[in-house]
Image (cartoon, rainbow over all chains, first blue to last red):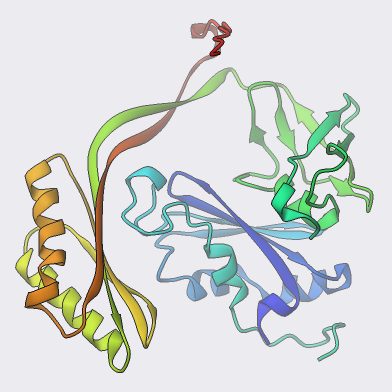
Length: 108
Length: 202
């Protein structure tokens, strides 16, 4: 299943650091996302775009998983040569990640 | 999502007790709900425990959002002694040059075109990529330089693919734009004297 089926996401940027906020469509799936979507998996899925460390913050009250991604490849917004200079599309690229959750409450 | 063609940006009525009520003007499109509000709440925050703003150091870890787009639980610690400064500098100009390929083997012809351009521009730092699908794609070549002649040459190399490249290249476009780079740093708050100037244009 794609992460997109369980979550929505928004990307932000600060220089060559990207933030990716992942939210369950159903709050009941938050714990499942905590178990399933790790910083290592995010970094591996977006390896083409992220050269540095990925730090995951857990925010159970929203609920949200907030990923801070360092050293975006060809980042820096104004001096980037990429077509998407801000990395706004990283949010949708992350939602294309294949996940294998156990115990999803969302029917398929 | 209703009426995106008449989108209205939201506003927040913020209280000192860490709550806020979000609203937007009647008759405007868009939607305020838990999903849109929490996406905006975390936007570009690199430390949810300490988001530096000029007025407060914000901790959003206990924030909750209700279905009617009310926020509670924001906490603050004293504002930082320094302010963030974004310094703009002239970083040269950026050329972006593109050409399309379509039909059978389009992606392969795009890749070949990229090889030709990078080979001819050996030693010049360019980004060459083939964007789009297998049967309708576009070669995009981009570079930043302070040398206008070099930027023009890069565009010329892509345009030359019309007659010196893979079959069926079409739709060449190129443009050059000035680049203002951004360097971020901090300065002591007391070094800044705020002032506001209104300019009216009739």
